[in-house]
Picture 1 (spheres, rainbow, N blue to C red):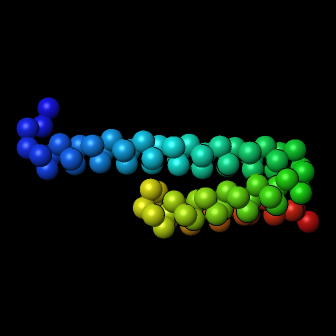
Picture 2 (cartoon, rainbow, N blue to C red; picture 1 turned 90 degrees about the vertical axis):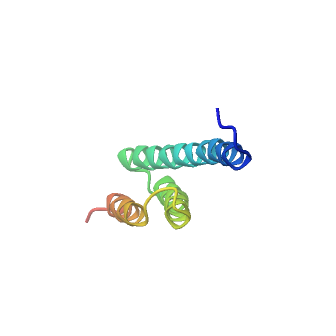
Length: 87
C-alpha cells in the first residue's frame, strides 16, 4: 500500500477511472453485439438505429482516449460497411 499522499490519491483515481473505462467499453461491446444481431436478422430499421447508437458510442470513446482513435475509426468503418444493404 502506498504511504505518500499523492500516491494514495493517484491510486484512488486509477481505480475510479478503470471502473469507468470498463463500464464504457462494456456498453460499446453490447451496442456492437446488438447491431450485428440486427444485421444478421436483416432488420433494416433496427440496423439503422443500432448503427447510429454504436457509431456515436465508439466515436466518443475514441475521442476520449478510452480506445485508440484509429481503432475507433476502423470499427465504425467496418460496422457501417456491414450494415450497408447489399445490392
